[in-house]
Amino acid sequence: MFHMDILGIVSFILTILSTAIAFWKHHRADDAEKQFTESIIQKLPHQIAEQLLHRFTLQNRDLTPSQPSSNTRFSISYADINGDGMDELLVQYPGGVHGSVLDVFGWKDMEFRHLGGLAVGTPEGFWAQDFDHDGRIEIGTKETDWSTDLPYCLAPRLLQWYRWTNNSFQKVHEVKDYSSADLAEIKAKFLQERQEDPPNSIGETRSASHAC
Image (cartoon, rainbow, N blue to C red; front, top):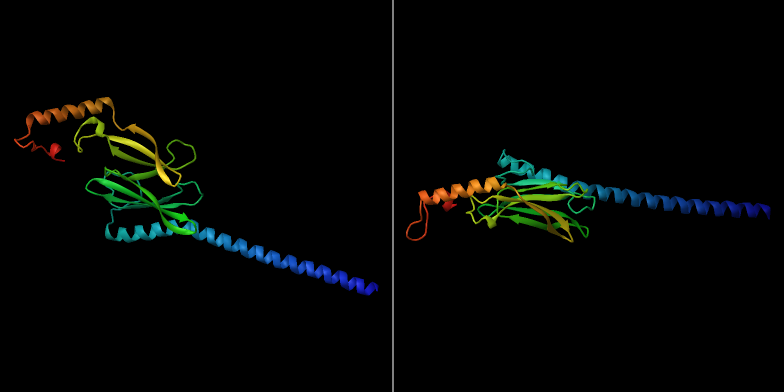
């Protein structure tokens, strides 16, 4: 009787150990899969950026990652713009004659897809930076200040900052990227050019400033 009780206890303990080992293996496999998946998710934007940049750099050795530039033709970088702990892929390129376009790609619903973008009417491009030091990344750019009533090539710029909010970019800050003295100087130059090169009979001007 005592011998049967021992066997029963040993059998019960072995059953518990087997169950615990199976659970541990399953949990370990889940952790390994999770770590593997997270590793892929975190590295994918970096790998795509490096491959794309390498491909386009072979065609043009002057291309550089997303630093502010007055003539950025194509630029690739990555940054965590939505605060989910994973980097998004940032691709910028020219839009129209003078403009710049930014497309953002990242993970959503277990798919790597296009998340959104920005466009401005200047060739200044875009850059990622925590401009207000709140721990979140914003996107900086420059746009034409049309309120000055100046032609495109003379109009000063507005420095703008955008933050990813509710699945889209929202402008959170805008400031003049010029001083009152700068504007006065630009307008004086514009008036001088108009006096030296008045419009013809159909309202056109020969000045390069007016033509731009």
